[in-house]
Length: 116
Image (cartoon, rainbow, N blue to C red; front, side, top):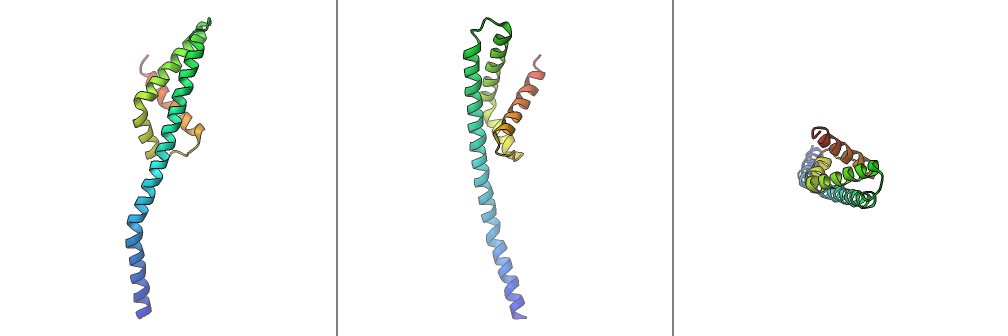
C-alpha cells in the first residue's frame, strides 16, 4: 500500500515538474523555427532582388515583366516578413526550404490575385 502511494506521488511530482519544462522546450523550438523561416525569407528577398537587377535591363519585354514581378515579391516579403514568420510558426511548417518557398509563393499569389 505504501509503495503504491509512493509511486503515485512520484508520478504527480514528475508531472508537476514536467509541465513547465515542456512549455519552455517547445517555445525554444518555436524560436529556432522562426529564425529558420526568417532566414529563408531573407534569402528569397535577395534572390528576387538579384533577378530584378539582372533582368530589368533586358531587351525582352517578357523578362522585364518577370523582373517587375520579382521586385514586387521582394517588397511583399519585406513588408510582410513578421506576419509570414508567425503564420509558418503557428502552422508548424516543416523546416525544409522548398516547403517554405511554396508557402511564400502561395501567399504572394494570393495577395496579387486580388490586386488585379
